[in-house]
Image (tube, rainbow, N blue to C red):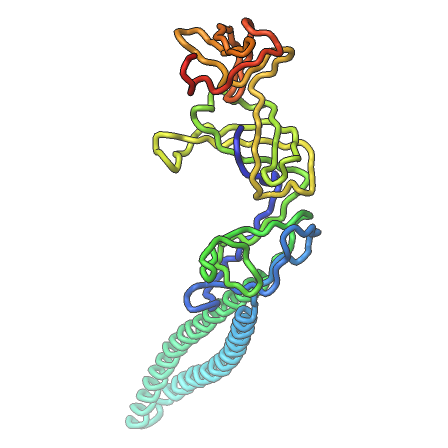
Length: 370
């Protein structure tokens, strides 16, 4: 007999969402407060609300980030308009400087017929006009580079604000979790700091990101996850039939089968030298009482024999490669050799040396021979 826990073959685990981006959900804890929670054992449909968290902080963050984003958008529009006006002004000044150069060149043509003083003035005017045009041209290019940089800074700030806004909106949407499939709800037990014990979560309690809250399971398909001691591993193989029993309901049993055994064992809690292996048993049939997270047992049929004589194993004693039983004869018990065949932890098959209906003495290994 192996002991384990019932679990669903198809199950969706609902966990506390991990919020994206910078959040302000608590004093450095990231905890969320549950405002609505479905009860355990409720059949839900796809799309039904399972759990809802307090979203006020996320909504406020979303509104703040949205306002920041819109403000930066307006700043960019204003900056572009100001830069367009400044460019137009600079282009006008540059055009005037170019015209001044052309005018100075025309005045230079009069130097042959004008006085020497006027000719020198015309030369100075031309040099001054050319220098001013060069200065304005260089300044024009530098102003365009600076304007592009200023605009790019605002655009980066806007993009960051937009990402923060989208993160906040996404976080607000994560505050409501709906059922991804039809099924039965099963609340998970997690460590509760306020109650200092393992317990199901309740509305109004704080939970941390990543913590499992509940499962939505398909009740039509269940299985058992059990542990096998390394001493019993050689007796078991995939495909063996079994009978499944629920510890809480002794009168209920289901046919089952050993589906798989883990190829690698894990160390025992009591000794590092003892290993246990995880096994999976399928369960045929369904029942409203067959729900996840309840303890169960699986009796594995190692061998099937019919029309055989069976004795309790503690009624057989072995000495010098010979098995004996104490059979009642009148008012006394006499020792009789028998030949045994297949056996389990509880029973043994007697192949010869004993007839059906005989009364035998049990627990003879702990008794002294009489």
